[in-house]
Length: 346
Ligand code: GTP
Image 1 (cartoon, rainbow, N blue to C red):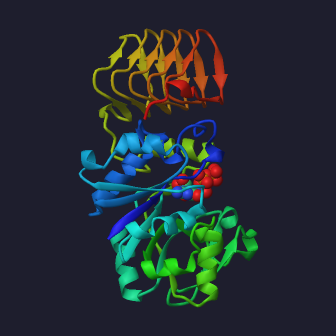
Image 2 (cartoon, helix red, strand yellow; image 1 turned 180 degrees about the horizontal axis):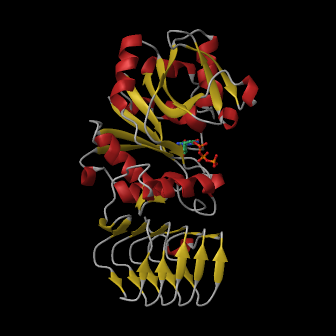
Image 3 (cartoon, rainbow, N blue to C red; image 1 turned 90 degrees about the vertical axis):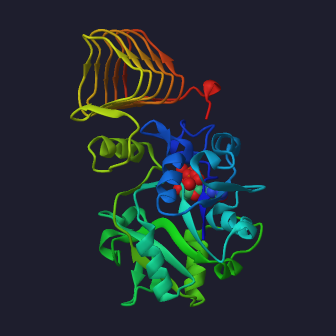
Protein backbone atom coordinates (compact mmCIF):
# COMPACT_ATOMS: atom_id res chain seq x y z
CA UNK A 1 0.00 0.00 0.00
CA UNK A 2 1.47 3.36 -0.93
CA UNK A 3 0.71 6.89 0.25
CA UNK A 4 -0.14 9.88 -1.90
CA UNK A 5 0.82 13.19 -0.35
CA UNK A 6 -1.03 16.22 -1.70
CA UNK A 7 1.56 18.97 -1.86
CA UNK A 8 0.79 21.05 -4.94
CA UNK A 9 -1.50 23.85 -3.72
CA UNK A 10 -0.70 27.55 -3.78
CA UNK A 11 -0.87 28.04 0.00
CA UNK A 12 -2.31 31.52 -0.47
CA UNK A 13 -3.27 31.94 3.18
CA UNK A 14 0.30 31.43 4.33
CA UNK A 15 1.76 34.10 2.04
CA UNK A 16 4.26 35.64 1.90
CA UNK A 17 6.00 32.52 3.27
CA UNK A 18 4.55 30.39 0.48
CA UNK A 19 4.90 32.91 -2.34
CA UNK A 20 7.70 30.90 -3.90
CA UNK A 21 7.53 27.63 -2.03
CA UNK A 22 5.03 24.82 -1.49
CA UNK A 23 3.24 25.14 1.86
CA UNK A 24 4.31 21.65 3.06
CA UNK A 25 7.96 22.78 2.70
CA UNK A 26 7.45 25.53 5.30
CA UNK A 27 9.79 24.84 8.20
CA UNK A 28 8.26 23.41 11.35
CA UNK A 29 10.72 23.38 14.23
CA UNK A 30 13.58 24.02 11.77
CA UNK A 31 12.84 21.26 9.26
CA UNK A 32 10.39 21.21 6.29
CA UNK A 33 7.08 19.82 7.53
CA UNK A 34 7.01 17.42 4.57
CA UNK A 35 10.19 15.82 5.88
CA UNK A 36 8.71 15.32 9.37
CA UNK A 37 5.67 13.80 7.65
CA UNK A 38 7.68 11.33 5.55
CA UNK A 39 9.59 10.23 8.67
CA UNK A 40 6.37 9.89 10.68
CA UNK A 41 4.73 7.77 8.00
CA UNK A 42 7.85 5.70 7.44
CA UNK A 43 7.92 4.89 11.15
CA UNK A 44 4.48 3.38 10.60
CA UNK A 45 5.59 1.13 7.78
CA UNK A 46 4.86 3.29 4.72
CA UNK A 47 7.86 3.34 2.44
CA UNK A 48 6.38 4.00 -1.00
CA UNK A 49 5.22 7.53 -1.64
CA UNK A 50 3.74 9.48 -4.49
CA UNK A 51 3.96 13.26 -4.14
CA UNK A 52 1.25 15.15 -6.06
CA UNK A 53 3.03 18.40 -6.88
CA UNK A 54 2.66 21.61 -8.86
CA UNK A 55 3.42 24.95 -7.12
CA UNK A 56 7.25 25.27 -6.90
CA UNK A 57 7.51 21.52 -7.26
CA UNK A 58 11.25 21.71 -8.03
CA UNK A 59 11.93 22.65 -4.39
CA UNK A 60 10.32 19.40 -3.28
CA UNK A 61 12.14 17.34 -5.92
CA UNK A 62 15.50 18.93 -5.09
CA UNK A 63 15.02 18.25 -1.42
CA UNK A 64 13.74 14.67 -1.55
CA UNK A 65 14.93 13.26 -4.89
CA UNK A 66 14.02 9.57 -5.01
CA UNK A 67 13.67 9.44 -1.22
CA UNK A 68 16.63 7.09 -0.67
CA UNK A 69 18.16 9.45 1.91
CA UNK A 70 15.12 8.71 4.07
CA UNK A 71 15.04 5.02 3.18
CA UNK A 72 11.82 5.39 1.15
CA UNK A 73 10.86 5.49 -2.51
CA UNK A 74 9.27 8.68 -3.81
CA UNK A 75 7.67 9.24 -7.21
CA UNK A 76 6.18 12.48 -8.42
CA UNK A 77 2.85 13.15 -10.12
CA UNK A 78 3.04 16.61 -11.67
CA UNK A 79 -0.18 18.27 -12.78
CA UNK A 80 -0.28 20.24 -16.05
CA UNK A 81 -2.46 22.81 -14.26
CA UNK A 82 -3.67 22.74 -10.67
CA UNK A 83 -6.34 20.04 -10.60
CA UNK A 84 -7.61 20.43 -7.04
CA UNK A 85 -7.42 17.81 -4.32
CA UNK A 86 -9.39 15.12 -6.22
CA UNK A 87 -8.01 15.95 -9.68
CA UNK A 88 -4.50 15.58 -8.26
CA UNK A 89 -5.30 12.07 -6.99
CA UNK A 90 -6.82 11.10 -10.34
CA UNK A 91 -3.74 12.44 -12.10
CA UNK A 92 -1.60 10.03 -10.04
CA UNK A 93 -3.89 7.04 -10.67
CA UNK A 94 -1.29 4.97 -12.56
CA UNK A 95 1.13 5.16 -9.64
CA UNK A 96 -1.33 4.11 -6.94
CA UNK A 97 -1.89 0.66 -5.44
CA UNK A 98 -5.31 -1.06 -5.22
CA UNK A 99 -5.63 0.43 -1.74
CA UNK A 100 -3.76 3.60 -0.85
CA UNK A 101 -3.57 6.38 1.69
CA UNK A 102 -4.01 10.06 0.87
CA UNK A 103 -2.66 12.74 3.18
CA UNK A 104 -2.99 16.51 2.85
CA UNK A 105 0.66 17.37 3.30
CA UNK A 106 -0.13 20.61 5.14
CA UNK A 107 -1.74 18.85 8.09
CA UNK A 108 0.57 18.80 11.08
CA UNK A 109 -0.27 15.67 13.04
CA UNK A 110 0.91 12.61 14.90
CA UNK A 111 -1.86 10.34 13.66
CA UNK A 112 -1.44 6.59 13.99
CA UNK A 113 -2.52 4.97 10.74
CA UNK A 114 -3.05 1.44 11.97
CA UNK A 115 -6.47 1.99 13.63
CA UNK A 116 -7.67 3.80 10.50
CA UNK A 117 -6.48 1.00 8.21
CA UNK A 118 -7.98 -1.65 10.46
CA UNK A 119 -11.31 0.18 10.48
CA UNK A 120 -11.24 0.46 6.69
CA UNK A 121 -10.59 -3.29 6.34
CA UNK A 122 -13.36 -4.21 8.76
CA UNK A 123 -16.01 -1.97 7.19
CA UNK A 124 -15.06 -2.65 3.61
CA UNK A 125 -15.84 0.89 2.45
CA UNK A 126 -14.72 2.45 -0.80
CA UNK A 127 -13.24 5.30 1.22
CA UNK A 128 -12.61 5.81 4.93
CA UNK A 129 -12.13 9.40 5.94
CA UNK A 130 -10.05 10.14 9.02
CA UNK A 131 -12.05 12.50 11.22
CA UNK A 132 -10.85 14.81 13.92
CA UNK A 133 -12.96 16.45 16.61
CA UNK A 134 -12.70 20.20 16.86
CA UNK A 135 -14.10 22.65 19.40
CA UNK A 136 -15.38 25.10 16.80
CA UNK A 137 -16.83 23.25 13.79
CA UNK A 138 -18.06 26.43 12.10
CA UNK A 139 -14.86 26.78 10.06
CA UNK A 140 -14.92 23.25 8.64
CA UNK A 141 -16.92 20.65 6.73
CA UNK A 142 -18.69 18.68 9.46
CA UNK A 143 -19.92 15.10 9.00
CA UNK A 144 -23.11 13.34 9.98
CA UNK A 145 -22.80 9.55 10.35
CA UNK A 146 -25.14 6.65 10.96
CA UNK A 147 -24.65 4.26 13.87
CA UNK A 148 -22.27 2.13 11.78
CA UNK A 149 -19.96 5.04 11.02
CA UNK A 150 -21.16 5.47 7.45
CA UNK A 151 -21.17 9.12 6.40
CA UNK A 152 -24.63 10.42 5.52
CA UNK A 153 -23.75 14.00 4.65
CA UNK A 154 -21.28 16.84 4.97
CA UNK A 155 -22.33 20.23 6.24
CA UNK A 156 -19.91 22.95 5.11
CA UNK A 157 -19.10 25.57 7.73
CA UNK A 158 -22.35 25.17 9.71
CA UNK A 159 -23.58 27.60 12.34
CA UNK A 160 -22.79 26.21 15.80
CA UNK A 161 -26.41 25.28 16.54
CA UNK A 162 -26.80 23.52 13.17
CA UNK A 163 -23.61 21.44 13.33
CA UNK A 164 -24.58 17.73 13.36
CA UNK A 165 -21.32 16.91 15.17
CA UNK A 166 -17.88 18.34 15.90
CA UNK A 167 -16.22 15.76 13.67
CA UNK A 168 -14.47 17.17 10.65
CA UNK A 169 -12.51 15.82 7.73
CA UNK A 170 -8.90 15.47 8.92
CA UNK A 171 -7.45 15.38 5.37
CA UNK A 172 -6.30 11.76 5.74
CA UNK A 173 -8.07 9.03 3.75
CA UNK A 174 -7.80 5.35 2.99
CA UNK A 175 -9.12 4.79 -0.54
CA UNK A 176 -9.78 1.93 -2.91
CA UNK A 177 -8.65 2.55 -6.48
CA UNK A 178 -12.19 1.84 -7.61
CA UNK A 179 -13.26 5.16 -6.01
CA UNK A 180 -11.21 7.02 -8.63
CA UNK A 181 -13.80 6.14 -11.29
CA UNK A 182 -15.93 8.90 -9.75
CA UNK A 183 -13.33 11.56 -10.58
CA UNK A 184 -13.15 12.93 -14.14
CA UNK A 185 -9.73 12.98 -15.83
CA UNK A 186 -7.89 16.27 -16.29
CA UNK A 187 -10.47 18.44 -14.57
CA UNK A 188 -10.11 20.56 -11.47
CA UNK A 189 -12.11 18.75 -8.79
CA UNK A 190 -12.17 19.13 -5.00
CA UNK A 191 -12.33 15.90 -3.04
CA UNK A 192 -13.96 17.53 -0.03
CA UNK A 193 -16.53 19.60 -1.83
CA UNK A 194 -17.27 17.47 -4.91
CA UNK A 195 -16.03 13.86 -4.87
CA UNK A 196 -17.04 12.81 -1.35
CA UNK A 197 -20.54 14.35 -1.60
CA UNK A 198 -20.93 12.68 -5.02
CA UNK A 199 -19.90 9.29 -3.61
CA UNK A 200 -22.45 9.70 -0.83
CA UNK A 201 -25.21 10.73 -3.26
CA UNK A 202 -24.43 7.66 -5.36
CA UNK A 203 -24.63 5.63 -2.14
CA UNK A 204 -21.08 4.41 -2.46
CA UNK A 205 -19.83 3.39 0.97
CA UNK A 206 -17.91 6.21 2.62
CA UNK A 207 -17.04 5.73 6.28
CA UNK A 208 -15.53 8.03 8.86
CA UNK A 209 -13.30 7.08 11.75
CA UNK A 210 -12.22 9.48 14.46
CA UNK A 211 -8.45 9.55 14.79
CA UNK A 212 -6.85 10.76 17.97
CA UNK A 213 -3.62 12.62 18.64
CA UNK A 214 -2.37 16.06 17.75
CA UNK A 215 -3.89 17.51 14.59
CA UNK A 216 -3.74 21.02 13.16
CA UNK A 217 -3.62 22.33 9.65
CA UNK A 218 -0.93 24.92 9.10
CA UNK A 219 -2.93 26.79 6.49
CA UNK A 220 -2.94 30.17 8.24
CA UNK A 221 -0.24 32.21 9.93
CA UNK A 222 -2.06 32.03 13.28
CA UNK A 223 -2.25 28.26 13.17
CA UNK A 224 1.34 28.05 11.96
CA UNK A 225 2.39 29.97 15.08
CA UNK A 226 0.19 27.92 17.41
CA UNK A 227 1.73 24.70 16.07
CA UNK A 228 5.14 25.99 17.13
CA UNK A 229 3.99 27.01 20.60
CA UNK A 230 2.38 23.57 20.96
CA UNK A 231 5.70 21.97 20.02
CA UNK A 232 7.60 24.12 22.50
CA UNK A 233 5.07 23.31 25.24
CA UNK A 234 5.30 19.62 24.22
CA UNK A 235 1.54 19.50 23.70
CA UNK A 236 2.73 18.14 20.38
CA UNK A 237 5.72 15.85 20.94
CA UNK A 238 7.34 16.28 17.53
CA UNK A 239 10.87 14.80 17.67
CA UNK A 240 13.38 17.68 17.75
CA UNK A 241 16.91 17.39 16.42
CA UNK A 242 18.32 19.77 19.09
CA UNK A 243 19.25 18.70 22.61
CA UNK A 244 17.30 19.83 25.66
CA UNK A 245 19.97 21.66 27.69
CA UNK A 246 17.63 22.84 30.42
CA UNK A 247 13.87 22.57 30.97
CA UNK A 248 12.29 23.87 27.75
CA UNK A 249 15.60 25.03 26.24
CA UNK A 250 16.63 23.11 23.12
CA UNK A 251 19.93 23.99 21.46
CA UNK A 252 21.41 22.47 18.28
CA UNK A 253 25.04 21.62 17.54
CA UNK A 254 27.86 24.12 17.08
CA UNK A 255 26.12 27.17 18.62
CA UNK A 256 28.00 30.12 20.09
CA UNK A 257 25.90 31.82 22.72
CA UNK A 258 27.63 34.72 24.47
CA UNK A 259 27.94 34.22 28.21
CA UNK A 260 25.80 37.28 28.98
CA UNK A 261 22.97 36.18 26.66
CA UNK A 262 19.85 34.62 28.10
CA UNK A 263 17.65 31.86 26.70
CA UNK A 264 14.18 32.06 28.24
CA UNK A 265 12.13 28.85 27.93
CA UNK A 266 10.48 27.59 25.96
CA UNK A 267 12.95 28.19 23.17
CA UNK A 268 14.41 26.15 20.29
CA UNK A 269 17.75 27.15 18.80
CA UNK A 270 18.94 25.43 15.60
CA UNK A 271 22.48 24.35 14.64
CA UNK A 272 25.43 26.74 14.35
CA UNK A 273 23.47 29.74 15.69
CA UNK A 274 25.42 32.68 17.11
CA UNK A 275 23.85 34.95 19.73
CA UNK A 276 25.56 38.10 20.96
CA UNK A 277 26.03 39.55 24.44
CA UNK A 278 23.06 40.67 26.53
CA UNK A 279 20.52 39.29 24.05
CA UNK A 280 17.39 37.72 25.49
CA UNK A 281 15.85 35.02 23.30
CA UNK A 282 12.46 33.59 24.25
CA UNK A 283 10.03 32.82 25.62
CA UNK A 284 8.49 31.21 22.55
CA UNK A 285 11.25 31.64 20.01
CA UNK A 286 12.32 29.23 17.28
CA UNK A 287 15.62 30.16 15.67
CA UNK A 288 16.68 28.33 12.48
CA UNK A 289 20.09 26.90 11.57
CA UNK A 290 22.99 29.27 10.89
CA UNK A 291 21.20 32.37 12.19
CA UNK A 292 23.26 35.22 13.52
CA UNK A 293 21.74 37.39 16.25
CA UNK A 294 23.68 40.42 17.40
CA UNK A 295 24.03 42.03 20.82
CA UNK A 296 21.10 43.31 22.92
CA UNK A 297 18.53 41.55 20.75
CA UNK A 298 15.12 40.84 22.30
CA UNK A 299 13.20 38.07 20.55
CA UNK A 300 9.97 36.49 21.79
CA UNK A 301 7.00 34.69 20.19
CA UNK A 302 8.95 34.63 16.97
CA UNK A 303 9.80 31.99 14.38
CA UNK A 304 12.89 32.55 12.28
CA UNK A 305 13.94 30.20 9.48
CA UNK A 306 17.53 29.45 8.50
CA UNK A 307 20.42 31.88 7.87
CA UNK A 308 18.73 35.03 9.19
CA UNK A 309 20.95 37.90 10.32
CA UNK A 310 19.50 40.07 13.07
CA UNK A 311 21.46 43.22 13.90
CA UNK A 312 22.24 44.61 17.35
CA UNK A 313 19.44 45.93 19.55
CA UNK A 314 16.62 44.54 17.42
CA UNK A 315 13.38 44.00 19.33
CA UNK A 316 11.21 41.26 17.78
CA UNK A 317 7.86 40.02 18.97
CA UNK A 318 5.30 37.81 17.25
CA UNK A 319 7.22 37.75 13.94
CA UNK A 320 7.79 35.05 11.30
CA UNK A 321 10.85 35.37 9.06
CA UNK A 322 11.68 33.33 5.97
CA UNK A 323 15.16 32.04 5.14
CA UNK A 324 18.07 34.45 4.86
CA UNK A 325 16.35 37.58 6.11
CA UNK A 326 18.70 40.39 7.15
CA UNK A 327 17.38 43.04 9.51
CA UNK A 328 18.59 45.78 11.76
CA UNK A 329 20.11 47.25 13.71
CA UNK A 330 17.88 48.92 16.30
CA UNK A 331 14.37 48.33 15.03
CA UNK A 332 11.23 47.26 16.81
CA UNK A 333 9.12 44.75 14.88
CA UNK A 334 5.85 43.40 16.17
CA UNK A 335 3.75 40.92 14.18
CA UNK A 336 5.85 41.11 11.00
CA UNK A 337 5.76 38.20 8.55
CA UNK A 338 8.61 38.73 6.12
CA UNK A 339 10.22 36.64 3.44
CA UNK A 340 13.24 37.17 1.26
CA UNK A 341 12.99 34.54 -1.34
CA UNK A 342 15.98 35.29 -3.55
CA UNK A 343 18.17 33.44 -1.08
CA UNK A 344 15.70 30.57 -0.70
CA UNK A 345 17.22 27.12 -0.91
CA UNK A 346 15.33 23.96 -0.06
P1 GTP B 1 -4.73 27.94 0.32
O1 GTP B 1 -4.47 28.57 -0.99
O2 GTP B 1 -4.22 28.77 1.46
O3 GTP B 1 -6.16 27.52 0.53
O4 GTP B 1 -3.88 26.59 0.41
P2 GTP B 1 -3.83 25.31 -0.57
O5 GTP B 1 -4.84 25.38 -1.64
O6 GTP B 1 -2.41 25.10 -0.96
O7 GTP B 1 -4.13 24.17 0.46
P3 GTP B 1 -5.47 23.45 0.90
O8 GTP B 1 -5.51 23.56 2.39
O9 GTP B 1 -6.63 23.93 0.17
O10 GTP B 1 -5.11 21.99 0.44
C1 GTP B 1 -4.76 20.91 1.28
C2 GTP B 1 -3.53 20.19 0.73
O11 GTP B 1 -3.75 19.80 -0.60
C3 GTP B 1 -2.27 21.05 0.73
O12 GTP B 1 -1.18 20.26 1.14
C4 GTP B 1 -2.11 21.48 -0.71
O13 GTP B 1 -0.74 21.60 -1.08
C5 GTP B 1 -2.77 20.34 -1.46
N1 GTP B 1 -3.46 20.81 -2.68
C6 GTP B 1 -4.47 21.70 -2.75
N2 GTP B 1 -4.85 21.86 -4.03
C7 GTP B 1 -4.04 21.06 -4.77
C8 GTP B 1 -3.94 20.79 -6.17
O14 GTP B 1 -4.66 21.35 -7.01
N3 GTP B 1 -2.97 19.90 -6.56
C9 GTP B 1 -2.15 19.28 -5.67
N4 GTP B 1 -1.24 18.42 -6.14
N5 GTP B 1 -2.22 19.51 -4.34
C10 GTP B 1 -3.16 20.39 -3.90
